[in-house]
Length: 131
Image (cartoon, rainbow, N blue to C red; front, side, top):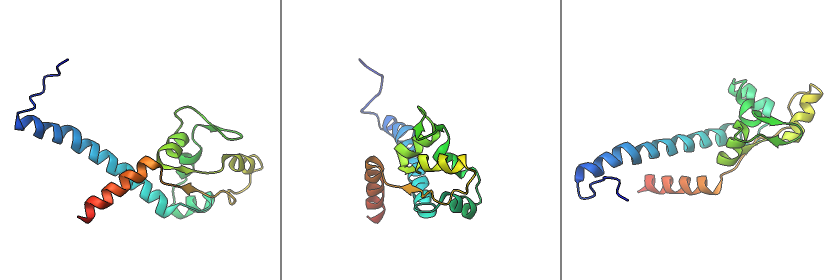
């Protein structure tokens, strides 16, 4: 099966790098920066404190959008994507318990851990920048 790429043509390689590789690099860098921002600003904090400090009321959605009590993640939910891709999650069982009784979300710690694939990406990026 042929896809019509002239592998010997310098212009084809430049176009491939510009249109595909550079776009992928930019997307990976965006994800990496998002992970770093979460790690530096909300990791280990109480959910209520993180929302107050950041001044972003919708920050809570990262951890609970698309979930349901006691600790269920919906397929393709925002919270599941953040949990699987960036390792960012809270204790949903505790969250829904506190919400049920209209309590402040003081007991909920946010955890942001590096996923294996993200850790590899971080290491490669840091090695490349140190050269």
